[in-house]
Image (cartoon, rainbow, N blue to C red; front, side, top):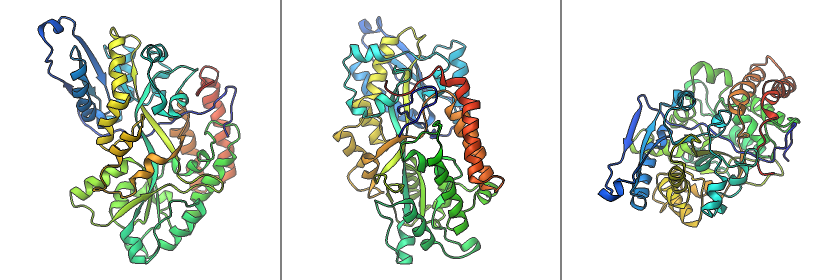
Length: 439
């Protein structure tokens, strides 16, 4: 059930984490092969995209340029740590950038994004492939970007540990309470030899997920659904079945290295972990067998209900070539671009049967049950509105959650303070100006 502040929020999408690493700026322009006559009409565009996505954009552009030889695109990227801050500065200073990729909410308050509704109508684009994402990405009933990929959550598990313990693998339909009991069953040993039943990374999403799975939003006025999630994480710490929050912070424990170490039975994390584990297998860093099942769900919520974080491509409203920039956006975020991204292991914003088959592959690569990722019911991880990510997720939920996890506050106190800070630090600033989702 969606709630509201002063505004009506019917749904939104979240963003996630998920950009890659890089230490230097990179550029990639494709060699122009247009004829002399075509060169006279050539348009040169510049696109800045997330580092992890750069190579796939280059591959997709190679296909795009076959149909559009007069549109040349130079792709650039910025290291992850500086990506959004630097890109916002570049755009606000009037730098000549035609297309930007990333989390849409980061750019909404700059007023730099071109509304796409007229372009979509003019091109008669079939938006059904985006599913609920299309309407939930609207802000003030306008479309400012289309998703070329997204990230969803899943439960990864170490099959070898389950086999050794003679315990049945996690079920595809498992409540959070069943997950807790299974984690306790899989926990054993002490100290350096301890096997943890599960690993919950110290992100607030790992506990507020349970509220979002019910359809609640982190900007709701009634945050009751989120109390259960925070209490649940604290209860699992008391069980000893997950590493405690304080130990995670002091040891800089990370979900990827922790799971690859081989002493974590279940790892709650996003689809990007597939590529990390495949790479680890290629480099022979892990030797255990692994698979995925849907994330656990609250009682009364359908199995395989997860959180989604879309990553969009957007047009700079100050671009001198907005029509051509939209052509690139249309290709990259539509079926043709989605084939390219799916082939590289990305969950795509646009989905059809063919793209699902490409993503799932021929079964020769793990995880065996990767199909669960394209069968999920999705809720936005958080509303794609200005400030929600930076103010609420990175500060309010993180800080107050930590106060509870260190016993400096009770769960009730933490949730109460979150509600107060959401209204004071975010709603007073943004709620009157931005409405998310379809009217």
